[in-house]
Length: 305
Image (cartoon, rainbow, N blue to C red; front, side, top):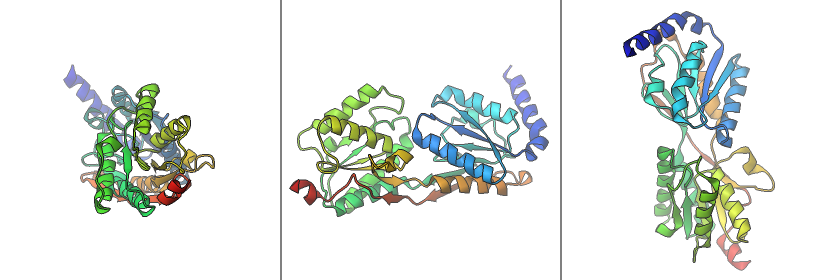
């Protein structure tokens, strides 16, 4: 049965090659579109694809690994000219894709494919440098909700560690909240973890959050506990999702360049020639930038309030 299915897969790919070369449709695989970053990235890819004359066929796995194989196969059966992944997928799903079609991973990696990422280490290091320049020494790091993306979590924690080491500061284990949940974890459980963290004695004067979503949850819990931001606690996020710039939030954050992610991906699709195959691994790492807004302030200003 497996041999027969493999042969069928072969015929599907082989029979679609000629039509695929003339297609103007790009298949996009996204994770959980309930995550604002994923939704905004998908919208940016679609907008830039349209500007180059491509249509987009979007499929979401909903963050469920079991959906990956089905979604990839469905897009291939629609004879898309290229695949752009906005989320990590398993080897079985990637195995469906031949070398005669351009495949781009944004914020991910895969062998023999193009991966476009932001330098997460540099990003959280920037966050720490900003806070230490403001006089903060007791700085925390929260990355819970990222347990389902261990490579991303580890990279951002490494940047935090480097920033602290460069400033000659020790990291207190009490100021770390890592690997206690995923993006899909129960919100109530996660909120309780953040509340306990903020209620500890001698809490940090500043926090680096590994996601803007985490920073927003911290802001919500802090408001419940009458902890003022930035008067009592400075806060830096990571991603720069649209809501972070809203005047009522005004979150200082590390920006991921969605526009550059999309433009590099579309340019790679347009350069690809099927007869050349995709036989090498490329990793384009883009530099992060910091958006300084109203959730951070100098430590002496906090103490004077």
